[in-house]
Image 1 (cartoon, rainbow, N blue to C red):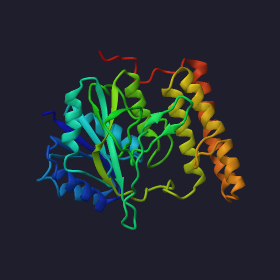
Image 2 (image 1 turned 135 degrees about the vertical axis):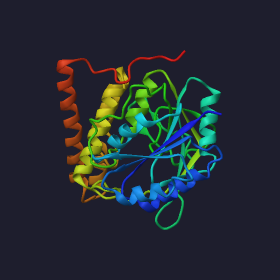
Image 3 (image 1 turned 180 degrees about the horizontal axis):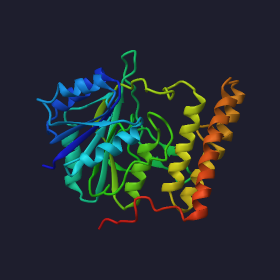
Image 4 (image 1 turned 180 degrees about the vertical axis):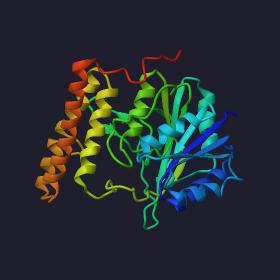
Length: 324
């Protein structure tokens, strides 16, 4: 059976981290290594992790900078196994999580990444349920489809994995790092989209299997980017990251179409023209502020990309390695 390491970035969520590590103790296929990456000032998380030292092959990696990108990039060099499974501290992997991940990688040597469903638990105790066949896709006309928390059906190839439930083959991500150009002090949204697309561009397959599951208890973020709450800086950062990732990782017509989609359509949080006009028609009092913040983020990303293009061709991030 394939050996797996587990990587868990954590920051000031000791109760969530305890639940996550308890779930890792109950895996049918035990990990050979569990890496908890925590800020050096986060004493409570260190204490929780240390309490599991006798039950898990635990390593604590300290970081002194904020952001999940820095945490993941700092933790990756410590990975020992051929497969690294990544989850968040506010998730509890199902007991067969690692065993199912390993089975996929063993079944097909062309698979570079595996992810699955995150069952979202709301504060009132209910579980978000639903059924979506389309998951983790970048459609030809530029729209990004997530739905990882609602996916049903058989395992299938996708374009994007979700950060709370994703795993990668070391050889597939050799030399790759999560993009440090992404903006934000905490979540740095869309970081997993960039990494997934970089692995896929190398010719590896990314698989989504709803049976590869974690329970997800979305916890408050430790910055101004709070779920469901508008903050202009958070919206600007998210729009920047979306534009930056797609324009550096997609190629040809898909890159152009994604840019047009974001400018003309966007989504409810990073509004393009169409979402903005819809919000105006519904008398949304935040419509103008949301649109302006998203527009600033997109324009900043495009400006920086133009500067990059003026000195060199857009880099082939992740290279062009193909899998036989």
